[in-house]
Length: 249
Image (tube, rainbow, N blue to C red; front, side, top):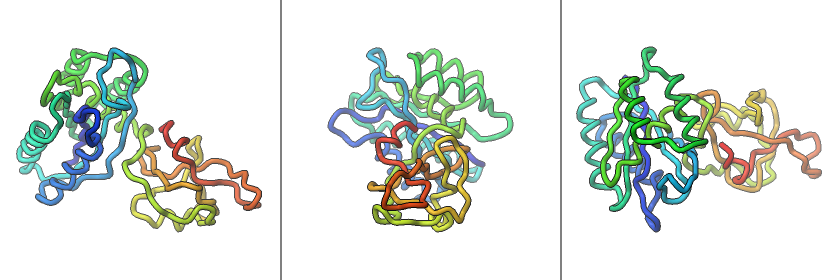
């Protein structure tokens, strides 16, 4: 059985962010052999004075596969983890959706997209969770994080939102590397242009001046490239994007 999980609002100023906590949770699930978690993605939500957030208002999501008989143990572990490991003063929310043909991914994705552009309420979130039959619970504080947790599920389900946690050293700045060589890494499904077109495996790209970030596009973990205008690399049409450019995902 495969599930999608999203968590929001677990930190406070001066503490480790939600991404670190979700990574710890995934490591525990794997160590306990209760579930096999996927890479974690970060989803940017609306920044507004009426929305409480710590720094950037983003939710963290991942997928997990598990045996049906382990579901209750996994849910209990995740809820206890949030209630004991989140920072005092935070408002953590947890959303878990079973991935199946019956899941109303379109409606959930629409909620996620709305949460990137306007203020949504806990009532909005709980109403949608009830209609779509997915798990949504709060685990401290005001529980306002349920809005971001549900929105993150929708955005990850959309397949075209978010950037994956972690930066990768895949070559020195200025190195010329083939798409095929980069796709040999288990966390790189493809190299794509900014408008979503895949590059052929024999295409040569220039590694940018910074570490490489992967993003979620077409339900895949990909490296995005931009036109290369470096005169030192004639004939090379593309380069990996910068940290600043990656922030749009």
